[in-house]
Image (cartoon, rainbow, N blue to C red):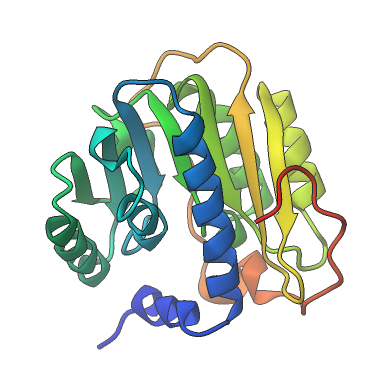
Length: 231
């Protein structure tokens, strides 16, 4: 039986909202790799799915061999698909870990990360967990790390508050891109404050039952003006 999350990946087909969002996330990853200083680049992706956002960029980016990545995903079919693509690309330092990304334990041994991808999470958890996750991010990040995140702008739109929470946690906004004709949006923030010591097994979030998730609400609305570089 196909899992909910494998079925969810069907949304990447054609020109659906997921596909439009994916292109913006890939642009943010590409920009990060372009400006990263010489040397190894540590990446963590939580609830990574089949990793197509990161792997799509690493399939052609000249710095792909410098990337040391951990992609955390619980669905075995998605993990298998991701591992197959990693093998095809010959990315020896990119590893899928079949694990629950809801606690910091999934990141042990891979921190501090220079790039942290938390896409497809904030729309499936309660507001308190969104803030709690953001507050813990400095424990997962290296100095000047970039965090790329996504969230739908369904009513009530939490994205202005999320952007404020990042600021309060010591991050500066690099960009915020609402995807036209969808509720989707992609944010990117850079850590300005000092990283904090990593604490193992701290809870980040808990996925809500499907019918209670914020992503189940609302219809597309007109997006506000984008900030920062466009897709």
